[in-house]
Length: 534
Image 1 (cartoon, one colour):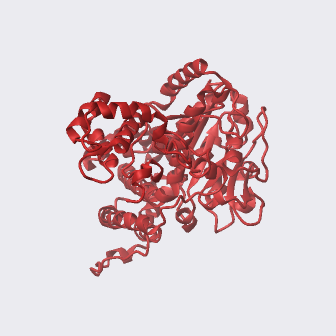
Image 2 (tube, rainbow, N blue to C red):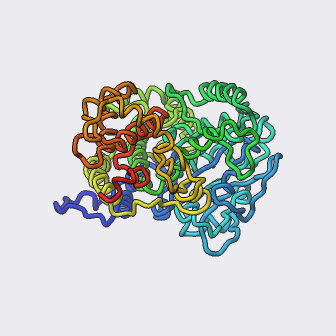
Image 3 (cartoon, rainbow, N blue to C red):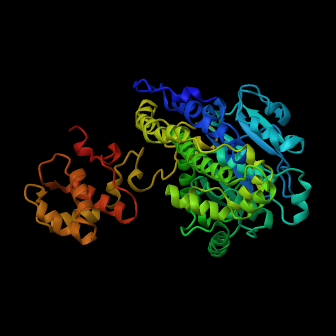
């Protein structure tokens, strides 16, 4: 079957048009044969198709009921989408993929999984009970030209609700977690209890910690003292579930378009929103890198899987006692893991979950497993060492070729990234103060700087650098910052400061002391009127 693998390489270097096409090519020609030979798709993840590589970046929203998942999507799009249901009770009862299309409508799950242009075909394995609870809502929103969003049913508490779903909820979450670019866990500031099903859902996301972002939503409904307590309680709860030594990054905010109940935390919410939106804005730019990273993870798992399957096949008897030996091997699978780890110097983190692997192996005939085929493994090793390195080198060039403009446009992104209106982020603050005003902003406190300037003994209307330094160092700012402020203030670059330049330097010092950044170039509105013709 794999006789073509024995042909000698012709020595020509493989050329790839772009990263995505390269990933498709090396997956089909080098990794897929290994996966098929050792039944990887039956144990771990279905075969990847072209839509998996071509798909836009996807965001998965997960949370307990009424934490604001659907409202978050509405907030991003700044409009409703087909099939939207919002309320205080558990409203979203299905998985909804919100995607771009000029024609708005709803595609039911059964039709969605047979569409060759969509990446959802493998979801058919979860059966009709799931497909009846799965749909795609198509919306002509500019936001969805850059990303797709998946809304999930609110996670309930209690065992009964989990059983009543009729399909493997955590299995579906695992499938999505493997393929999406970002997983946003939403918590309501009013109910931080993590139910059993939510705990299982978070555990299903393990192995994708780099994709997870946590949002504490509806934070405007509590005052700053309560918010501090709620934040501490959330971190304590997460510490028990996430089981990572690092502290999780939590974005605090209120993601809807209604007035804030407590306005005292407005600035905090704006800062957090900026950080979260920057993170989402990076997804289209980093999509190729994420797919590359996921393929590397998949290749490592496929290699380990091949070692496990071939080791089990090797230990099976040829004639009698097969069933007994199979049970014994499954029971002692941990020892097989240890042996493979020692023989091949593989990290423990590369091995699949022991319990899940034991459950999967119980349904397979070990005698049909294949022995180890070193040539298949060599091809994957070569792929990881050479082809992946080539694709990695292409990513910076592709990024340079793309526009530096934000790739997600419209909806809430327009408002959050607004740099024109007076309501833009940090407009009228720090270095931006005075922009668009007829009067030079420095003149507002000029009387203080002029008296200070006169006390420094100017000659011919200017003071020396040494005289200016004696006053500027009183700010206790580092010399590197003061040096930058000096260069921006000495507009005529004569090594001296006149009254206007000195006033500007003191204004910039105050801007920095107030916690704002100093730019590398002086904005036009801060140039003294006497120097604007230079």
